[in-house]
Amino acid sequence: MTAALAVVVVPLTTDHAEEVVAIYQAGVDEGNATFETTAPTWEQFDAARLPEHRFAALDGSGRVLGWVAATRVSDRCAYAGVVEHSVYVHPEARGRGVASALLEALVASTEAAGIWTIQSGIFPENAASLAVHAPAGFRVVGTRERIGRHHGVWRDTVLVERRSPRID
Image (cartoon, rainbow, N blue to C red; front, top):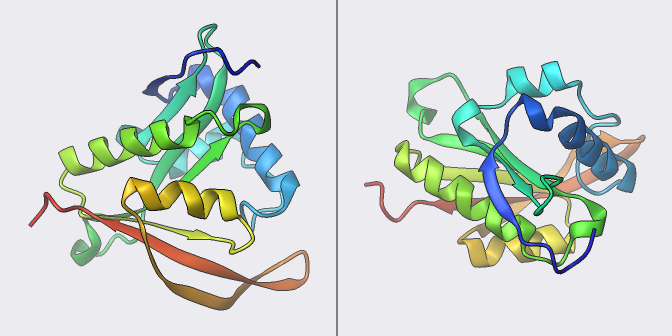
């Protein structure tokens, strides 16, 4: 992958499955992206994420550079406008604005759907993820200390959220 290639954001579909799962696994392998120890299968990924709020960033040849997807936080009606998201970028595509473009697409789709809050839990060690979320309108809500074990070690997460200024 070269830095000269343009980034195009498109709806994430089954056509992107293999590359999406591989990028997810790369994040798992790096150790600071998720509590998961292995990426889900495409079928698991597809079933768990909202189809209207998932996007892939592609280079000029159609290769997937990264993805963003959202899930419901709760089935309770009070939380109908709240989603949790994940954004992953291929290691060789980082630093090119891929995550920013994906977050922009996610914000646009969620606001169009009346979703008022997008949230995520990010490991504090994942400085790049925290840094890309701030300019996208996310704020740090707080740190959830020892929220879960990862490879036998208690880990914290930083809870970030973006509240839509358009939804009243």
